[in-house]
Image (tube, rainbow, N blue to C red; front, side):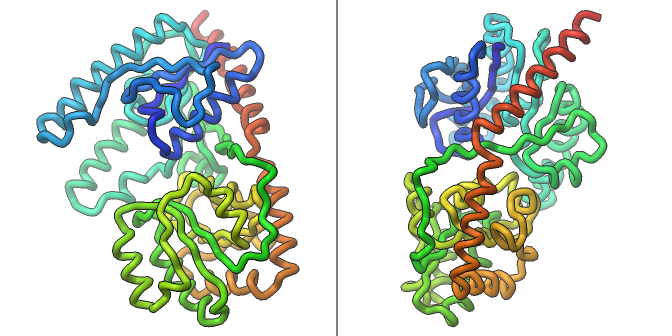
Length: 385
């Protein structure tokens, strides 16, 4: 089976890049599979663990190279370079002649199904359907969001043979009744030898320091936790534009010795294993991989029940706690409950470890292979008519 992924880059550590590399590597290990990655923006260097069995083709489109120069260069990126990208993808596909073509939902998502070929096409959704509206803060942004949704969800996405979303919650709320939609969760590649003993008096949180992750709410909640349990601390791992206001909030509460912003880390699993629970206060998520990573080292998790992900991942009061979004008092109460009840913390940690197995790479790849085989048969039937 010949499988092609289209992706913007593999030279950064974004979530889409990481999960695509993990899946491509695993699929390349399946006997009979050949896997390619058509990369728009980087030189094709095999960075961040791309397997030698995965063939990387650098298209050298370089969308954002000159964006800083002027708005004219931005327009070139939107129109000319998109045309250039499409031509180079089409040329590569003509050479490969794949069985399955997968869009990860980046710069290629709207033109990919219009390229003629006998292959099955799949569109992955790694974010909420209304993400453009959630990010729109002005009238102009809302106009752009409307135009983007119109092009994406009315004129483009239904040309794909299948649409893959990450959670049942997203399927039911955003894609209800669409027969092309299939749920396949992201895989989490973890080191099963890493395990927390749940003794360290530390709560951990991981994510970019951006409004979506809502770390101000976590800091507010932990203020109450610290009053009851001054020997516990909160460590936040991640970097982003909100570092300064978050640090100011910590200083305002006089919690510099209780809450720390640690920046990014390449040893997140080890840091989780040196903690006793994970907290997540996102306003919304596409999935919530960090929850599964924490559970895979035996941490119970406390999370806002935001759309979409936590409700698919966490079984409330079994392997973690789901808290109504924005309820900082309840969040603090649940964290304190796990601090004060060691038996419950250990019991829920064991349950979390067991639950994380649902997202092992081997199990998820079986779901993908099943979908590929089904679509290839269906597509061949359509093309032969």
